[in-house]
Length: 537
Image (cartoon, rainbow, N blue to C red):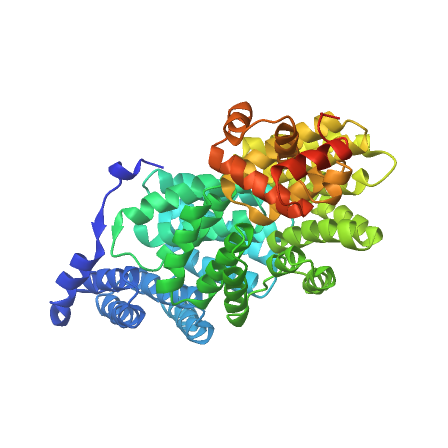
């Protein structure tokens, strides 16, 4: 994709205003352009009227192919906005036109594309593949790049649903390369971007989604007044930002979508994404409110809502929520997250046999779809099961492989969660020093992200081998501070030893006294000597 500053900037507001001012005398081509400008500005009713008038004007002028293209865009855009009945009426009009005028390669390609879309909507994926291939071939022969790109996009989607994953994503790559070359019109570029990115995210092809989301953002920035793709683009972008650990920006992006978006399909995803981010940073009430709003709009809010319950130590509710959601057989993207959550919840708080089945299903999905994200998820899920067995050492290679993927994808949160598991695996193998190194590495990342609930779980795990300190709930850092207090050091000296601020040390000392139920530093010193905590173990 060309850099944003080299893209042609289009002012759709100015274009619409200029054409609307001459509405009564517009030619067929100008009515078509008015419909496009209105569509980009989100003025659906005016767009439909203009394209309807344009298709009649084209017919009067004897240009049946252009009339058919107008009717196609009416049906396509209405279907995209969920207006299935009206979209179907316009598609019926398209087939009426193609049957009443002389057949040409142009209108044959458009008709084949419509039939392919209809077969896909009916779940006839193999038929959609055959019709899509015909539409691509016809459009290519006539040099109609727009129709060829739309047909290739539809073909890729049908191939993926027919289980031919590699071929399907190869089609998606061809679509994006065509857009990047600048050969595709703006009316096609927007829908194609969104459809391809949605297909990538639905199957956790994060590499592709990340690249194409950046390109979609550049394209949107070059369309002044653009409305239809801002919401979808922003939701996609927020998902990528979340993966990259840029959580504050992701929150701001989704909050903006929730304020201005009208389409329920986009709005429900925005609220769910906002709920996930609020959950991760410990904003429990905000997270619950966002999940409930997403549910009101019709979205499945698991596994996020279940993990929120888990953080509140409502384990039975968390497990049942995920199990219920899995029974609905969701799309691959949602199912993968549900399976990963089920493994975690059942290993820690439930039935290991259920966890094992979920891990097996996740591995099968990873092998079928072949994306590195799912492979890393499957490795991590299998490692969770192994840590609690008599062969914990077998978990470490899986976790190292998983962590390497998260590092390559620049996904700090996923990498940190994996390192917590590496710490637990090392501890299970008897290597407490290695375990604490992994806890420290994960702690640094999670603290930087503000992942409150994960930090709380980490500290409980890290303290498990600390005897009296662990039973009192002291973290490893608090234990270090306690030892230095017992050695007679002041807060300033402790801050220098541990490379902390005096304020942070004072907070640690206050936490230690509170957890141990002690009233002074001298009492803390006595506790440390009494329980053998005054020197490193």
